[in-house]
Length: 462
Image 1: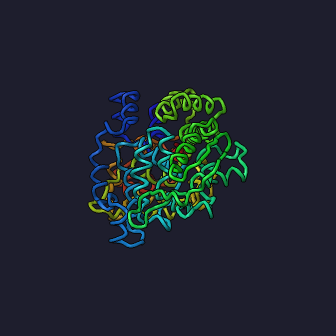
Image 2: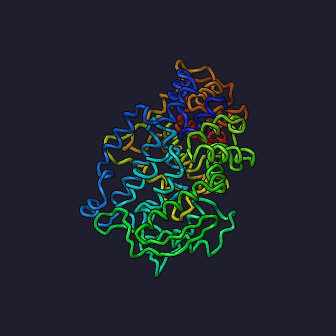
Image 3: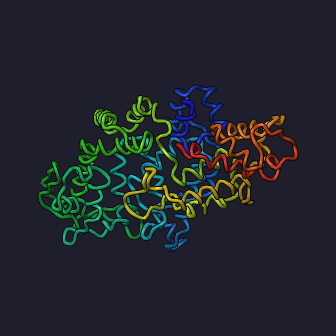
């Protein structure tokens, strides 16, 4: 794997020949600088796809007025999430949207958020994806979607619900290593009482009468919390304290290192990233720059494996699948369910796992291979596929071995000699066998050859 391919496999949903040529032309540093400032990246296809879903811009009240509490808009969000992953030019932004959507997970679709989940994506995750984690945390925890999902909108001083108070400590910030106690969990929940969601507006509101008043103490955070009217200020101060906590710095650094470097990043790298996080006031950009320039990142080729959703998207990208005319994305809409990873769909607060062992089952592997063949063969009429023969080198090479190596190169998958032998054997040939224009390898078995290249272990690396 070349350094450029390594960079693209980690910072995008999958390299394509066109993207590789672009980065070679502009230089990796210039390309990465643009990706870190997504507003500077022109994205005509991604923007056009987003405009096909105008309801994703509706306020909560309008969603309820038109759709009641069905899942129409949440399913549109899921489709657009997939479409952006495949076709947006703002690839690093899409990768980070996935990171933070899992870090601060509100399952989509799920009950109680049908009118607000799309706003969580737009106003919380996307708006703050490359900003400060402190601002992201405040926006997420006080959002209508998070408050409803963890039933904090019903939490009062007289009857506090501890769901959000607990997940905030355990999953969103300091983690179990902080040694937080059940007393801390209850105090955490009490700090957040009074935050609710307007029944008509669908927006976060503050109800002073529901806020618990009295001194609060969670870990090192202390506040007299003497006024019900100022309870929202106390909640925000608490959230900002947690965002700046050294263990939150380690938590965020670990999550980013696991996504971009390896399933088990070194403690030294995590410490270095955590220091940068703290010094930069929880800003994400300096941490990313340091991470992507680190020796551990540069030497981590082959240490990450695509999740099923990432595999599907990477396959569609390298095969040159084009979007349909409308909003029905065909098999790209239902393959993630077959693969066991519908986008944004993890049902628990902890988000999808991002380590290889979680996705290593035989059933998942077989489903991936089936998806490769379906996309390579162009079986879905709702998508616009490249014809398999468009991947053939022209003029045709002299031997089957040269053909197989050329197909690997076209799909950005370097093949080992033993794999070339095996793929030639699939069509009853050896690498030295002469190739004719009517051979099965370049006619009716070509799509299968393409899919088998994508089935190789190295194609599954990220």
